[in-house]
Image (cartoon, rainbow, N blue to C red; front, side, top):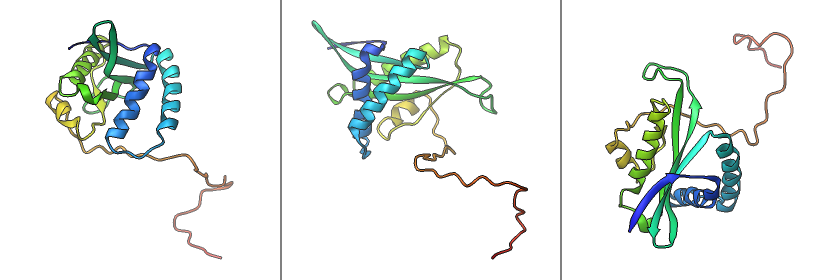
Length: 178
């Protein structure tokens, strides 16, 4: 079987959604697949039209039917220069996924090579990603460095902000009680 990689379009949204749901399923994440599929499809519609998310798909060339069997994408983020990176944009990679029947054929690497080439051509000099346990060896072989990332997450759903206070901020040394 032969494969070809190409830039994804919104016409490929169903496959991109299927791959995102499959990725989390394969990682053993417990989630509402239908809700994720609906939300991701709406997100793709917004960000692909805006050009902030770009994706690539791999088609299995099988006679008259070219089925999408792998893919991946990036979001281009404005990023401040720092000690290790002096650029102004970062490509964050996600949704790299290969359907089980097509794994171990180099398709994820093919997608990553396309992403790297596009980023280099666009003047983006650094990339970041979160790797699954299964994907980490490939990324390391490609030169990605494992880091003790300080990234933390905070869920705002259900967040109840503190009441607005007037007057001066409380003094940390003021320990009066009622």
